[in-house]
Image (tube, rainbow, N blue to C red; front, side, top):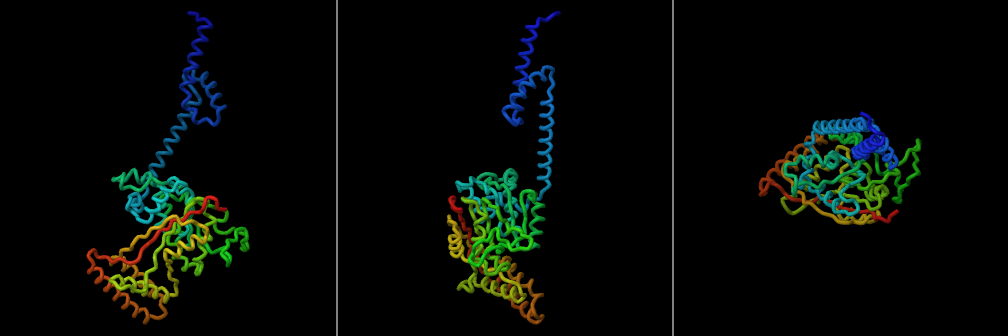
Length: 393
């Protein structure tokens, strides 16, 4: 049977229109409007006989994406996230929970920490960061997901700083175990480098022989965390505490936030059963000094707020959290003192200190047994929220 040329043209046009319509959904992979048009025209002809080189590539790409998703799911299933799942619960960690609430409420950040700097890292802050990076997965696997869950907050990347090489290795290894090593960097460094006697930061004026830049020179972050950093400074950079915020501010992007976590100093004595903790603190610090080590030195909340303002930041808000000590908590502090005994100048001095520490453990047990819930209250932790003005240089 002979078919006229005009009828052939009508059939070809009809099939061409159908092919173009069928191909349109895959155009999301095209890179330009021009490419879109060219793809439609070329595919309409190729699909006349039910085949398309573009369709084959689409299927291959879909298969690759599915395979990558499967691999990611398998890797996630292999991770042990038991150490960070508590952060997915609203009451899992009071201090970090408050920080998350503040970040969600901040109109400048809209629930994301963005580029994140942990200025004095450790295992606890690293695990919290891992919980942010895995937050969607943790929330999806939380049995009471809903009102009791932490917010679905995010983080683009992280940089973690420590002045101790042993801590750097520990944090880096834990980052690998938690599946976040590819999301950031763990760096060893000291914030006192490059700070002049007047407190100015001397970027671009490094006096190192190899001409290397200062720690994080030229880098800025949307959020900075100082997690008990000020209290720890005395162990690494004595007398630098009043300048730490001046050193950190250049790395905070305008409109970004600095979160400071600290411990209100434990007093020398109190007229209550909580005085046992004051005694433990004094003896613990004496052991540290007799071992020729430096003690941490905590700073009060008002000191922190005052120096944040001096560095050019606005103090947005702060919150305090009373500390409850049970017997086990006090024994941990006593054991810090015991760990230093082998470094005492003489064995006789160490032997006498053993008696003092043992007596403190007995007394702490007696005190806690007399409390209704087995705990005493003394001092508090605090969180300060500071913000760099949007119009700052």
